[in-house]
Length: 331
Image 1 (cartoon, rainbow, N blue to C red):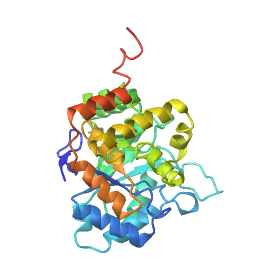
Image 2 (cartoon, rainbow, N blue to C red):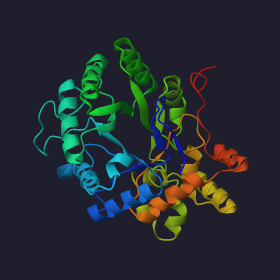
Image 3 (cartoon, rainbow, N blue to C red):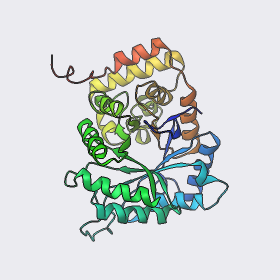
């Protein structure tokens, strides 16, 4: 496993990030523990979760599963760079209550304590803002974060689903306060969705913020969706926006060209999609969310895959990027 620095920090993280969103909803606790053990054995030290994972009436369940895994000892917590998120509403289902979500100083303080309890740890390595809170000023957010850093409850702060100008605004506000600011940004980024290249990634690079792409296979679209469809696995190969996308003839043709190219070179589509992200400027590592040990093993293979220039050029032709801004939308 290769390692890199997380943004401008001195923290070393694996170039594959273990996403845990399926732990609880789709993968039961014992199997989740086995996957986390296998990830550590493969050298993956960067684990990502969120306080709302588990969803519905089980919000927080994923953090609890990670906490029970840490409780087994054996250096599990010490070996893991732990990232979780705050923003989603943690009020009980059907019982909405003010200040149970978003990024007020009150909710940040309550949410981090609740996450620490579920995770069974006394600190979080990377505490991330799951979405932009347009009603909370950055000075308030950084005041809350600075207190948590001083208390030793968190070490670094990151963002997720923020625009380029949000990253700039956040880090300029942090600089005025003498705070460290954002060190990472989780964004939707993959071969089929490259709009982050216009402004989010350049902003992140300019501020020393590491990019952590989520949905690297675009909901399964880039994981051999058409081949699986032919083999009878279409119902599990895509979801959400990707299942809808395949109803479009132009997209189907694009994905067929993609799968044909990789078949010619003997490369698994899902592994190619991950390997492509590892070639992109500013990318720390993509988040993979395995439901099974084999899916984890595939991600590890992708981290070792080196795509040749011919393949990279053809991928660019099939999935052209938008180009940087303002040239992407102006002369």
